[in-house]
Length: 174
Image (tube, rainbow, N blue to C red; front, side, top):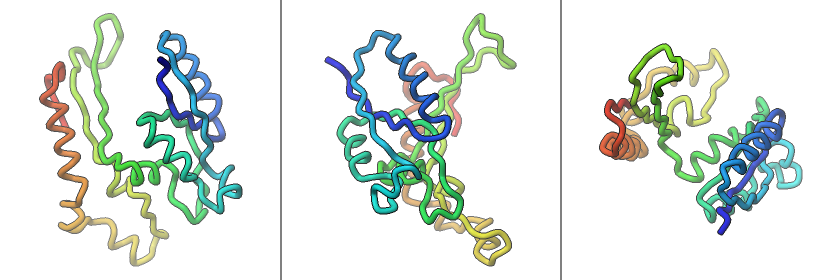
């Protein structure tokens, strides 16, 4: 049975990168069924100014997996980036990055085995921007205590704790 994957090619270099990634994944022998969906600035006109059409989110929720190429975020376009919208809509609050060194592969450091867990929806990743030099931009530089203890921070810590407890990671960090 094929695994259904939502594929969002993106724009600019996106289609080329996602096609190369698709070929690599297909070369593994795993049977994949690609559900190609469009998102980004190129489809806004067709979807009433929305760069992330509801059918794309519905398809991702249904399959639980998506491969997304780079998508341009127009400056001053009146919407957050598609990346930020995906994180918010799908509650993708934690980014998990395993880092491991392998024998025979040259690396600056040897014997690396750790997982980095990063909060993915707040601070710089919230998609909140202010014009440089405005009062709002100056006050946003130091987070308030309420911001530091926001709703997704405990969830991110749970992800980090679970990652640290699952083998084979021996040196977790967050």
